[in-house]
Figure 1 (cartoon, rainbow, N blue to C red):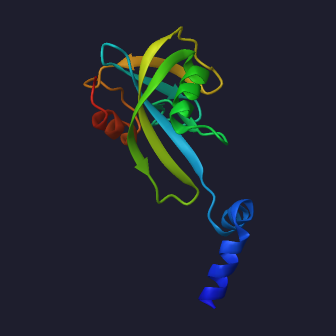
Figure 2 (cartoon, helix red, strand yellow):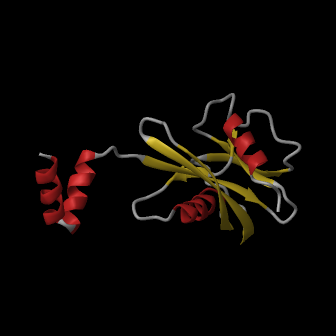
Length: 151
């Protein structure tokens, strides 16, 4: 039986194989977070409107769109939420094990733009020293800040 399945798989080739794999495997959303720093080493934190009231502060984050390279998700999300321009850096963390999503975090460097927050999602945006982070910061984001060293 295994030989028949293997032979059939080899005969399918290309797009048909991809369709079979698509239907047979789990689908995930990809959440992408940016540990954005300025030249002074401060980290950009956003006070999110839709997050829990006791933990509203966090790093810029959002979901990748179909076909988007994950580092570019950071660039897009920061621009959409704050108007700032960033250059993505190294991969900091990949976290799996969630039911419907995978979380990815990248370093990013602020290189320009004018701060103009998206008031639908964001209440406030501020630069913080890694040593003086605000109350109500997501604990997972504290860990990301600590694991992405200051340039």
